[in-house]
Amino acid sequence: MLVPAFAKINLTLEVLGLQDDGYHEVKTVLQTVNLTDQIDIQPGPNLKVECDAPGLDGEANLVWRAAVELAESRRIRPKARIMIRKRIPVAMGLGGGSSDAAAALVGLNKLWNLCLDPEELAQIAAGLGSDVPFFLRGGTALAEGRGEEISPLPSLPPLGVLLICPKETVPNKTATLFSRLTAGHYSDGGITRQMVATLMSGQFVVDMVHNVFEEVAFNVFPGLGAIYRRLEGLTSSRPRLSGAGPALFCLPAGPEDFSRVSQALPPHQGRAYLVKTITPAVAGVAASKAPTPGGYTGSSN
Image (tube, rainbow, N blue to C red):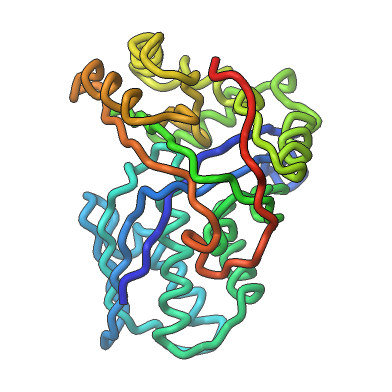
């Protein structure tokens, strides 16, 4: 069985502070786009996880842990052959690893005839990572807490998204980005609340897109500043950081943006992708319905 695993971008990302358990509290609006990994799940005598990206086979992959924890929840042995074909760039802030894990939970739930409902899958997903519960549904959603508390939001209309993925990242980049934040970077979540209210009213304002990590990312990722400067004047909307980066995205975007950026971006610096926003009906494996907005407003710069 083939299960698609979709990438995401962050329409907002705020950090509210450091909690007593050592995790940061966040508020973020997440949105799936139609760049996908493919998860091929087949019966097998034992658990085997392979990936066509170097270093992500076996227990090094979050899909392995997803399979083990799902099996343990029903006291069965995890038996399956899982092949992951990566198309979402790794460690870019696009959620590929978390999305793969969510897709594996859904596929294995079917393969093993466990009949877990979406709420039961979400409980297992929350223990795997902050973005995993979101990818069980996809579309547009508010994530709170450590990112595991998911509230569906009205779906965006199909909008073009230009992704720009640098060639280089840094080790332990999410922890590194969080370590660069100070109390002055923390907020009360007001930007995200405003984005949620706007989406609930049936609109999307491009200029409300926000990511606190933009304030530190350009001092962490090698070459990101040079890429950003190369993009100046080439895109119809301002490049924004996705997640903890270093991927950038422009929303909305079209073929002209993609053509200009592809021609200007040297292969040794990065790669551009033209994708689009998608709804839970397309992206979600455990989707519930949410109202549909009428459109978007706002300037592009």
